[in-house]
Length: 438
Image (tube, rainbow, N blue to C red; front, side, top):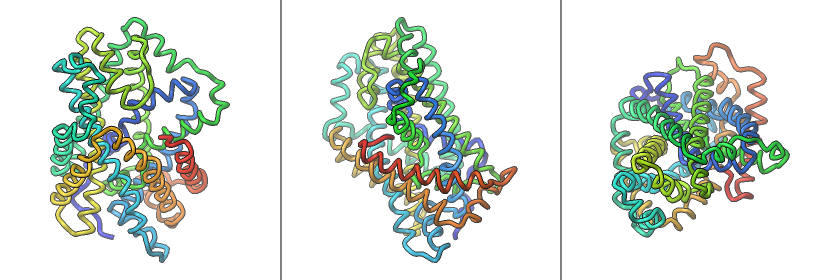
């Protein structure tokens, strides 16, 4: 198996921040706070923390380990796993999670374009002048966000052209701390809003009866699974750039902890503000692009607060897009044996052209439903089977033990092979039944 020689992360912190950047996204910002409040408040955190711990411990670490073992993305990694058993078809199977990352990148780049446009709209006051609904509607029609959409893709491509260390690692090392700092500033400001206490009650007063409801556990499981960006592709490619001296399980757990902190911080910044002005905390694009701008318009210096909010969301979006673009570009580079820079340019061009035709919110919603309900969960399920059932236990354990102070044991084997893979199957099935749980 061909290994990367130049594209590697220089430090453990850089790798962790890049992984957190991939994991932290819109789900942390517009979905987690709403699900927390609607499913028992603080009581919801109990199953959520349990699932985050489990998925971070065996899910993330497994994808990182497979990537580091093979030195490549899902296509090459799945091919390696299948061939290790004398089987064929690994490249075909690896293309499924790759398609998932490609599909999300197309839709996500449109949404992040809306975010970029909202930064300008907040700082110039155009959102307040036009009305949040009208400003959002202008961008979500056919070809309604072309320049913003293009700028987001161009920015992502430029970062990736700088390489893994100078591009992905260095930018995440700046953008992710900035993301946390900006959300912290907003959360502190929101704390002093009259009426914000109702938001904290919504988030954190526990309704213990929610733990007796199956849906609470289902939603906590789905939120935890997809919040960590376990897709069978993106984290594999980041793992392929990881040094053999790094402790994979430690890095995986730190990624899970910081991703959870990001979700909680988003809740503290958003929900109390929404309740302070007695608005609807429902999740999804309306919360971010309509409800919150209305809130900001009623706060002193709200245009600046709004600009900072959307800037922090932009950071989360760009860092996630870096990972999606990278896994697609790496597959293109290896499959057609072309230069990295050319593969990145081709990837960005294709993603932009396809995305042009789904800028209408109606089309984008349908596109993302198909990708996130069917393709991505199935790709994640394939990844779980490849790592813990197809690959020999000695191989994956050997990779996990490399750089670790002590080897994984029977507990890890049972948890990964039986509990984690079983839950990956359940996540896929329930996602279809519920119409999406992540």
